[in-house]
Structures are given as structure tokens and as C-alpha cells.
Length: 376
Image (tube, rainbow, N blue to C red; front, side, top):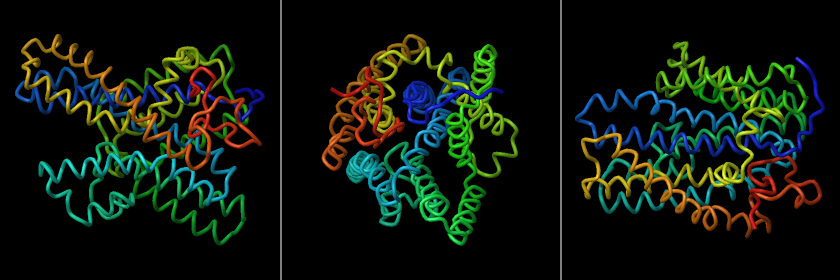
């Protein structure tokens, strides 16, 4: 291993681009899994055919968690707990709130999931406490936000008592809570791994440059292979399965190599298109269940899901993807971005040169991007 001079404030192309890749993985995985469950459910061979790609798609969520650990660390160090909480709230909650209201309205109108109309379930969903009371999140995919928010809170508390206002008692209590949370919800290991990658990255610790590309390809291949083998909820019992451990380790090793300055991932994701998908990834993650469902209903009623499964699914992907990206673009420009501009007077994603007084330096999410992906 070697040390190179690292600047923690540098925008990381790979981390930003991989946000978009992770969102697309989940989106396309849902197209495959949803049609296996609701369209071609009478044909077991279809489910067997798409199973590996379906599993791989769902692994985009844990990749998101790794990226979150990596990108949020500079922010939690830089800001006071109040500032950090406000920025996170304005960044995430408006879009989540609007789509949760949409789900509630649709569910009340259709009674598709009557058990989710329970006041206790609704209250827990809006406060992200559903993981503690055993209820479900409401808007699709928002289950992961509950873990994300708890990760923010615990990391913020730990940094506060370790850095901003050192306290042995505070650290002991916070540390005990963090350990307990990790034991009950070991999926949090992906967040912690992202922080570890950030610390290594900012210290310039890297393998020899000639060896790094080969290690990166090998780690990516391992992650894709193991992630395609099975689906996990990453509860404690799941980690008795070595495949779950291999997904965790390979995702962290790959990401550590991917965020190096001259990595293959960086070279592949530096286009404006890839960076744009990274910019809209949060909206894409939450919006696509609705556009997917509408497109699936339309295809089903028009008889476009035929026995020619490959042709039908190719058309389904070709229509649903641009429809979803268009809807995502609109939602990103309005519901996601506007509240942040109103509160802070700045864009969520900014070009590096626009940062003033050092604020937001080095934070890809929520406030920075490369010039090619900057909002006009």
C-alpha cells in the first residue's frame, strides 16, 4: 500500500456516478422482479431467468448505504448538530413527505393495503421510527430512509461527543447505543464501511497504481457475483450466510478502489449523462415505483406483455425508463431542489467554484457536483 496526497474536499466523480448506478440497479431490478411477481407469475421459468439480475438490482440499496457513509462524513464533521440536522431534513424530507402523502391518498382511495392506514403505522412512517415498532414504511423504497436517518443521528451524536464537545460519558453512552443498533440492525455495517473508506481515502492510502485497476475489476466482479446469488434483508441471521458477508466485504473493497482518482470507475462515469443520473438519483429512487406501476398497468391493459417475453420486456424497459427519467427530472427540479434553495439560498448540487467560505467543500451530497453536472 502507498500513500498519496489526498484532498478530502475534492469532488469524487466515482461516488457521485455510483449513486446513479445504484438507483438504476434498484429501478431495473424492480422492473424484473415486479413482472416476475405480477405479470409472468404463472411461468416459473421467467422468474428463474431474471432471478440473478433481480437480486443484483436490489443490491443497489446497500451500495447506496456505502456511498452515504462516504459522503456524509465531511458534513457531520463540519457542521454543528443543529446545522447538520437542518440540512439533512431540508434535503431529504420534502420529497419523502410529498410521496408519502401521495401513497396515503392512493391507498385510502383504493384500499389496496388497508393495514397501512393504521394511525400508528402512519405516525411511525413519518417519523422514521417504523424500524423500532415493527411497522412498514409507506411510500415504496422509503424503508431504507429509516436506516439512513438513524445512521445520520447516531453518527452526528458520536462526532459531537468525540470532536465538537468531547465527553467521555457522552461517548460511552453514544458508543453503547451505536453498538446496540449495529447488533440489532447489522445492515448498518454498510454505512460504517463507507465511513472507513472515507477515512482511508482522505489519508491517501491506496494500493500501487499499476495493481489498482486489476484489484478494482476483481472486486467489482466479486460484488456482482455474490450480489446476484441471493437476496438478503441483512438481519442478524442473514450474516450467518457467508454470501452476505462476501457482499459486504466485496462492496466495500470495490468502492474503496472505485473512489481512487484514476480508477476505472472514475473513467467510466465522468460523462455528463452519468453525472446527471447521479444528481437525480434520490428522486429516481423514490419516484420510479410510481412510474413503473403506471407503465405496468398500461402495458397489461394494452396486452403488450405477450408470450414473447424478451421482446415484451425489451419494449417495457424502453418505454418505462425514459418515462421515469422525465418524471424524475421534473420532481428533482421542483420538490427536491426548491425547498433547499428557499431555506439556504443555494442549490443542492453546485459547481466546486461556487462554494463560499469553505461551506459544503467536499460534500457531493447534498451540495456539490462537478461543473458538467451543475445546475444552471
